[in-house]
Amino acid sequence: MGLGLSIDLVGVSVRYAGRPALREVTLSIEPGELLALTGPNGSGKTTLLKSILGLVAVDRGTIRVGRSELAALAQREKARGIAWVPQSESPLDNVPLIEYVLYGRHPYIGLFERENAEDARRVSDALAAVDLTGREEVGILELSGGERQRALLARALAQDTPVLLLDEPTSSLDIGHQLDLLERIRARARGEGRTVVTAMHDLNLAARYADRIAVLDRGRLVALGPPAEVLSATLLREVWGVTADLRHDARTGLPFLVPRLPPPAPTEERPSSGRRRPVHVIGGGGAAVATMQRLVDEGYRVTAGVLNLLDSDSETAQLLGIPFAAEVPFAPLGEEARAENRRLMGEADAIVLTPFAVGPSNLANLEDVVTQGPTGPPVFVFVEPPWSARDFSHGRAAPLAEVLLARGATPVKDVGSLLRALGGLPRRAPTTPVHGGPATATG
Image 1: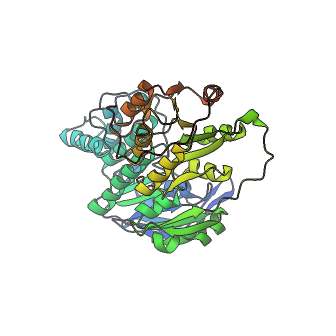
Image 2 (image 1 turned 120 degrees about the vertical axis):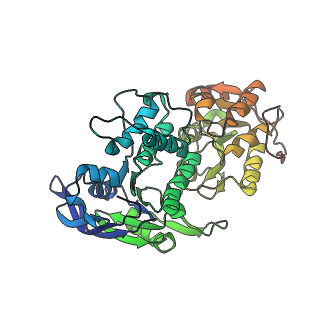
Image 3 (image 1 turned 90 degrees about the vertical axis):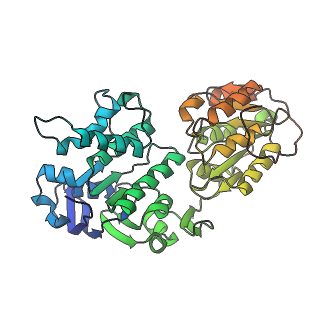
């Protein structure tokens, strides 16, 4: 099969255990298009992808790939036409990464043949495309979750098919690698004319990268079109049951939804033995959820650093009534948000660095803690997992954390040890926040 294949579903219905999983879905996807499949859990996204793969039997309707009916294609033809990136995979053997990616070339290698120079080139190009060059001999089980997800994509890219299907490809990646991976996938569609269909939970990510969005609800296709036409507060309310405001990113013009979370329920004031000291929490990607919840439960007055709207940390902060510096979804931290973060840090008795993953887009959160200097609030640093394991900023984050520890920041392993360390913390007078440029790992 060559590049430039369309996918056409006409009246496709699928049943699982006697229950409908897809209901009369009619959908056409053009070559060179990136289509995002979205919808609540159980809406049929994965079923639709597996139907296109031929892994799920269709009860009614037809699926065509290019000019051929899917049901008429031999297995090798399907494998040469359609590549699949599942949500996750648990390899049984710790094979070297290069062998794992080479699995994608099996549709082109005969029964008694070995891989040739073209196969080796495709594997090398695929590893380079997902930034895993140099890791060829590392065992697949030794890779981190994010690296393994990129290895799955590399295997599919090595397969060199006109159609690429992905099921939640960003599920185990930090925000920087999410954006990077989706940029690479979109380039495959626009630059090479491939047909790309990806299931995504995140509507705002879908709006940022997809040419069109298809929304499934209980197996039915309920919305289809460009992001600007599909993304709406009405859609989120009717399909997901969430009330939201529709906004537009001033830098890109793209729409994004900001859920309106209910205000926190009124609670009785805790006696708390005078513990209402202000504590500023730096997090992101869900890393600060447990810390914020425990600090509030223990009676501390909590603020938070820069958090992207719709991040689970920002949603938790809103539910708990925690002030934080807000940034639009999936954007680098802007100066306005950073200034608010520095202001909140200056009012705190302590700063807590939770075990968040650091990439280029949120490195500024860590830099601004360092710029507070030795005269700033005392700093408590989560050291597990090690900073080196969650440094996705080309090695810039871990040295900054070491600077803080060398200055006397208190290392903590978990929320319990943090609370014990905070127990004897004296009050301090608010300081004027520092407004300097980015920090370096030299002080």
